Length: 124
Image (cartoon, rainbow, N blue to C red):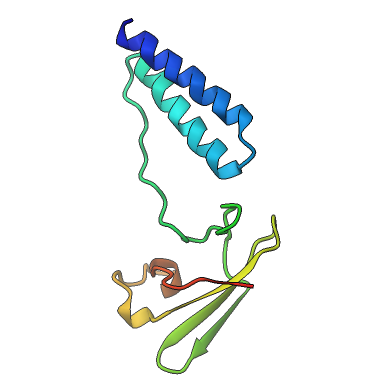
């Protein structure tokens, strides 16, 4: 079996898994794998984009994108607390961080919270 046939077989298997799974996150991962193997079967360079940061404005339950927290508070000691709610699955959580400890400075016109990692998640 030549490599192109192997890649096509793997792409077909990942397409089957994409249709069979019930999880949106798994379905998205299987679809990416299928696309990568289809590109390899055609002799093209697969489009491999870096994985998104965990918790980077995404719901921890269903992985839906969350554009912004619905409420943010400045707490004592330079802490910022964000309250999040997913519109899709109605899960709520909060995160806190210290903007002074963020590894990157803020981008012009953007809130410092967008550049900081979310160190703590609490589910309600």
